[in-house]
Length: 366
Ligand code: SF4
Image (cartoon, rainbow, N blue to C red; front, side, top):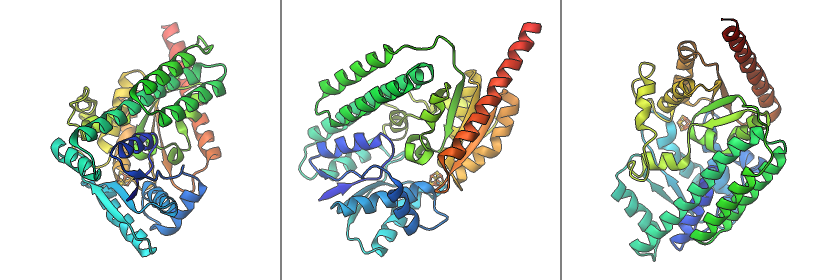
């Protein structure tokens, strides 16, 4: 069995490590490229969400490299995610591919059920080996996220931005290749120290909270690397989703660390009091939270036609007016382009900079 999976940011590194730990022959999806987009777009329904199209491109490219099994997560609720695995299977079978699809009914399922599903993936592993593989994958992901937070802090302040990006990229590649716990820990520690040693500007940068649909937030190819684009403009990004938080809340019952989702209730009221599928509810809660954390602006991202994010978008003007935070929504599809995105980001940053200056002048005069 040669197993592959859908790409989603640094989740790839963790899933690859987990599946290898389960003694499976892993064929990771090749890095998302123009060709991945083209394959996905050509073979998916036009109105499907962008993540589904990218998944289809991932699977075709992985099967070209010999994969014969796909592992995919299932889902339920009011948006289209619950149909993803079935639609993708139909598309690929229609194209003539022969493969097995394993659907993990993961989100919000019971922990023992999930552990069983993961163990059943490995053909010759004991429960102990499966737990060891899960813990090592988690360790890699946690190390990567610590570096991500560090880069988000350093990039807007660094005089040598390309140096910061290079240190980070090299560390991520090394962590991906690391084979044991100590290597991962040491690589992350050295990279954090190297990033911390870069000369930084003393000025406090503007801060923008990034909220929205999880795939668009976590996959740089789907958001045109928006975190770096913002960081290079000298603005600090505050991310609303980290994969370990999502896994902890949705798969691990909040047992590994403090739940970030539970405390969102205090922010969503009175704006949105029920779940609308996807990350719509979280987008509203996180936008309010960023406003109260005194971020200078909030940007919502999502794939074009994403229903839960459309609901959240309709609530953002109320949040913006009542909480006093400028907000902008960016939709992504296959026709998006970096140049247009940069222009919109620059205009937004310019606007929040002026707003801050006006507020400062008013406080000075009072
Ligand atoms: S959350 Fe949005 S992008 Fe994801 S499946 Fe649902 S509608 Fe599509």
